[in-house]
Image 1 (spheres, rainbow, N blue to C red):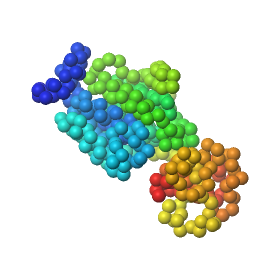
Image 2: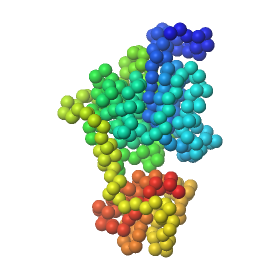
Image 3: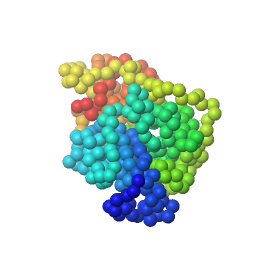
Image 4: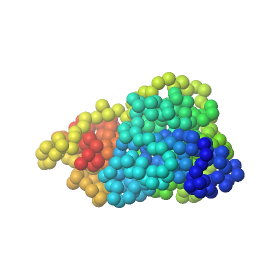
Length: 355
């Protein structure tokens, strides 16, 4: 596979690296990478891999751009709010490098389609922000014998590793059991410094290129921990867990991670609007800064402080609890039902995102 003069000029700085050369560039052009998520991590990963000349890039995403994404999802601009992330990503990557092939999967990545999607790629990049998807990515890659690069960000911290590579450890070797929903906040609930997505995503792209070209020593069997406040980078070893049961099939990963939607009674926003506001207490469990940005006029009782304000929550009539997406309100309702005996709570489906 020869390169055109234009391609040789484009990739000149990579080809000049003695260890990389034309051989490495050819390996990239012959390679395919699947990126799960076009968000904070998917933005730098997809752009750097496209710029580097990976031959085929698959994108899995079914969301639209939200104003709050712009702080870290550098693929998008203010004019993109409300538009399809996957379509915008495809357009951006093709404008960056017209030589590559882009495949789009505009759907939710779940147990019904994961094996089929993963099958035709050499490497998977996990850019998700929740534990059910991380375990799903792991198990699909194990069943299809695909290596994958994992990344995670939280406030001022980040993690990167390579799993299922050349017989190395998998994600389940690191986390045999998922944390509870309450102990696993995402960016929307815990917050994150936008640059952490750039740091971790760039490291994921670097690991991907090393895996695809066979250069250097990857993070297989090691977890890179990043603390931006102290600017500390350290690695810890990951060992194979011989007590783990082998992965034989894909499962219900939300149930595996303790997310049971059937436990809670819920109400749609349309039905909520039909209720008599004088007979309903509306409780907003988001943080004060989110409330000030936009709210439904409910009482602000942040999830982090809810146990300090139990007397403020009615035990008679109907109490509707909401957050931004529905996750924190579910946590609040479980806590209030199981620990304090409330039996009059409804979860607003989709939270503010459904308004």
